[in-house]
Length: 329
Image 1 (cartoon, one colour):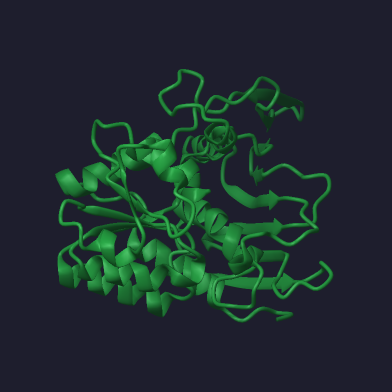
Image 2: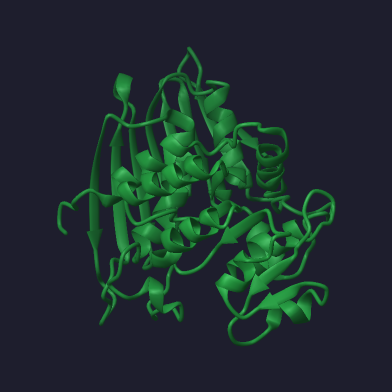
């Protein structure tokens, strides 16, 4: 799904990239969708293709490090799906191999370009609420049944809901506020027969008293707002409403004028306190979500040596938080 939805539509636009090849061991679905590409049977075949400069690694989580290193050793730049690695030590090793080979190592943290998060970023950047005090970030789903993607359900490195959704939320928070001073990790399991966590929470503390609460759960029947921010001058809340994944699943092109635009009724709510104690409430439309900008950044990194916005140290901070011992683990 990741390759079909989040990568191929952007790589196949034939302006900055050419979709050259994929690895498909069984059904040749990509070949059916993109008849001009090569569908290799093995990773080695793809890595031996000298015409390929960039390899996207979007395999099961526990294989990212191995394939990333193999691609770098083959002389390719890499873009790796989240979670980048099971832990910070392995991530650092991949970054070191990239430096050794003179190749760029980039991490696919696409949720920085979600419409709802872009609005939160604007509110924070413009200091509309004064000094931030408390931020709640959520990714709620309800899936009692186990995922058909077995690597997410087995007790192996980088499995469970924290490693599935946590990298998205942590990356967003780190991109806003940097490295936290302290963090607490809580995970628990509630689905019958589950081997991995299906509820997770992180508490991050920052200078000047900012506290961030992150939640990722597979058992929320009535999702709460994705973002709630309280500051010294007011509050902001926003439901999760980015449409890009659904649009891409439906076959809508990233070039479509309606791509990335949230539906009416999903606006963020800003509540400001006036000096006289009255509340001023404003609804704010989200900015256009656009994963094209991530791929613009990949192109700029490779062709123009412009720094990729997802910094390597930010990925290491993320994984240090994810790999810490859980309170109830």
